[in-house]
Amino acid sequence: MECVESEAERSVTRVAAYYDIGGLRLAALAQQASDPDDVSFGVGARYRLSDKLFLKGQYYQLSADDSDYDAALLALGVNYVYGPGLTFYLNYAQIDNDDAQNREPWVTASTLGGTDAVGETARGVAVGMIYNF
Image 1 (cartoon, rainbow, N blue to C red):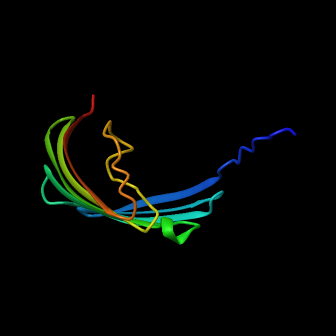
Image 2 (image 1 turned 60 degrees about the horizontal axis):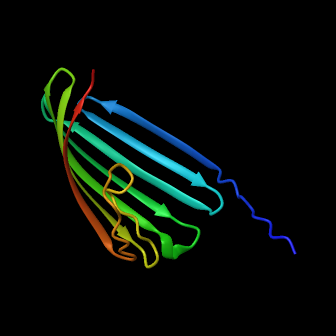
Protein backbone atom coordinates (compact mmCIF):
# COMPACT_ATOMS: atom_id res chain seq x y z
CA MET A 1 0.00 0.00 0.00
CA GLU A 2 1.39 3.34 -1.01
CA CYS A 3 0.69 6.53 0.93
CA VAL A 4 0.23 9.56 -1.30
CA GLU A 5 0.41 13.02 0.20
CA SER A 6 -1.92 15.60 -1.24
CA GLU A 7 -0.78 19.18 -1.46
CA ALA A 8 -3.83 21.38 -1.78
CA GLU A 9 -3.16 24.75 -3.32
CA ARG A 10 -4.69 27.69 -1.53
CA SER A 11 -6.12 30.31 -3.85
CA VAL A 12 -6.60 33.86 -2.58
CA THR A 13 -8.23 36.89 -4.20
CA ARG A 14 -7.85 40.26 -2.47
CA VAL A 15 -9.17 43.72 -3.27
CA ALA A 16 -8.04 46.78 -1.34
CA ALA A 17 -8.61 50.49 -1.86
CA TYR A 18 -8.33 53.82 -0.11
CA TYR A 19 -9.74 57.26 -0.70
CA ASP A 20 -8.53 60.59 0.71
CA ILE A 21 -11.03 63.27 1.69
CA GLY A 22 -9.13 66.25 3.02
CA GLY A 23 -7.34 65.08 6.19
CA LEU A 24 -9.24 61.80 6.30
CA ARG A 25 -8.16 58.58 4.58
CA LEU A 26 -10.74 55.80 4.32
CA ALA A 27 -9.60 52.29 3.43
CA ALA A 28 -11.30 48.94 2.81
CA LEU A 29 -10.18 45.38 2.14
CA ALA A 30 -11.99 42.20 1.07
CA GLN A 31 -10.41 38.80 0.62
CA GLN A 32 -11.72 35.39 -0.49
CA ALA A 33 -9.59 32.28 0.06
CA SER A 34 -10.18 28.67 -0.87
CA ASP A 35 -9.20 25.38 0.77
CA PRO A 36 -10.39 26.19 3.37
CA ASP A 37 -13.03 28.68 2.23
CA ASP A 38 -12.44 31.83 4.27
CA VAL A 39 -13.66 35.38 3.76
CA SER A 40 -11.99 38.42 5.35
CA PHE A 41 -13.12 42.01 5.13
CA GLY A 42 -12.52 45.25 6.95
CA VAL A 43 -12.31 49.00 7.02
CA GLY A 44 -9.80 51.53 8.27
CA ALA A 45 -9.46 55.25 8.74
CA ARG A 46 -6.61 57.67 9.33
CA TYR A 47 -7.28 61.24 10.41
CA ARG A 48 -4.67 64.01 10.21
CA LEU A 49 -4.88 66.18 13.33
CA SER A 50 -1.90 68.27 12.21
CA ASP A 51 1.06 67.98 9.83
CA LYS A 52 2.78 65.80 12.45
CA LEU A 53 0.00 63.91 14.25
CA PHE A 54 -2.30 61.20 12.83
CA LEU A 55 -4.97 59.05 14.50
CA LYS A 56 -5.80 55.71 12.93
CA GLY A 57 -8.17 52.80 13.43
CA GLN A 58 -9.00 49.52 11.70
CA TYR A 59 -11.58 46.75 12.04
CA TYR A 60 -11.31 43.40 10.23
CA GLN A 61 -13.49 40.30 10.35
CA LEU A 62 -12.48 36.74 9.45
CA SER A 63 -15.40 34.53 8.52
CA ALA A 64 -13.90 31.04 8.37
CA ASP A 65 -15.24 27.97 6.59
CA ASP A 66 -15.73 26.42 10.04
CA SER A 67 -17.53 29.05 12.14
CA ASP A 68 -15.57 28.06 15.27
CA TYR A 69 -12.51 29.66 13.59
CA ASP A 70 -13.97 33.18 13.11
CA ALA A 71 -12.09 36.19 14.49
CA ALA A 72 -12.42 39.97 14.67
CA LEU A 73 -9.55 42.49 14.91
CA LEU A 74 -9.81 46.03 16.28
CA ALA A 75 -6.71 48.25 16.11
CA LEU A 76 -6.25 51.87 17.22
CA GLY A 77 -3.14 53.97 17.03
CA VAL A 78 -1.38 57.28 16.69
CA ASN A 79 1.54 58.30 14.47
CA TYR A 80 3.85 61.24 15.18
CA VAL A 81 5.98 62.48 12.28
CA TYR A 82 9.15 63.74 13.96
CA GLY A 83 10.93 64.83 10.82
CA PRO A 84 11.60 63.89 7.20
CA GLY A 85 11.54 60.11 7.05
CA LEU A 86 11.15 59.54 10.80
CA THR A 87 7.80 58.55 12.36
CA PHE A 88 7.06 57.27 15.87
CA TYR A 89 3.94 55.20 16.54
CA LEU A 90 1.84 53.74 19.34
CA ASN A 91 -0.69 51.02 18.49
CA TYR A 92 -3.19 48.94 20.46
CA ALA A 93 -4.83 45.89 18.90
CA GLN A 94 -7.09 43.10 20.04
CA ILE A 95 -8.40 40.00 18.32
CA ASP A 96 -11.60 38.36 19.56
CA ASN A 97 -11.32 34.66 18.72
CA ASP A 98 -14.15 32.16 18.37
CA ASP A 99 -14.05 28.83 20.22
CA ALA A 100 -11.34 27.12 18.12
CA GLN A 101 -9.37 30.17 16.86
CA ASN A 102 -6.06 31.35 18.38
CA ARG A 103 -4.99 34.40 16.34
CA GLU A 104 -2.89 37.09 18.04
CA PRO A 105 -2.09 40.65 16.89
CA TRP A 106 1.67 40.35 17.47
CA VAL A 107 2.76 36.99 16.06
CA THR A 108 3.13 37.64 12.33
CA ALA A 109 5.16 40.86 12.38
CA SER A 110 7.33 40.17 15.42
CA THR A 111 9.65 37.66 17.03
CA LEU A 112 7.28 37.06 19.96
CA GLY A 113 5.87 33.58 20.29
CA GLY A 114 2.18 32.77 20.47
CA THR A 115 0.27 32.02 23.65
CA ASP A 116 -2.03 29.46 22.05
CA ALA A 117 -4.98 31.06 23.86
CA VAL A 118 -7.70 29.27 21.89
CA GLY A 119 -11.09 31.01 22.07
CA GLU A 120 -9.69 33.99 23.99
CA THR A 121 -9.29 37.70 23.25
CA ALA A 122 -5.64 38.46 22.55
CA ARG A 123 -4.42 42.03 23.13
CA GLY A 124 -1.19 43.79 22.29
CA VAL A 125 0.48 47.20 22.43
CA ALA A 126 3.26 48.25 20.07
CA VAL A 127 5.57 51.25 20.34
CA GLY A 128 8.13 51.89 17.66
CA MET A 129 9.58 54.01 14.92
CA ILE A 130 9.71 53.95 11.15
CA TYR A 131 12.62 55.45 9.28
CA ASN A 132 12.27 55.86 5.51
CA PHE A 133 15.51 56.57 3.68
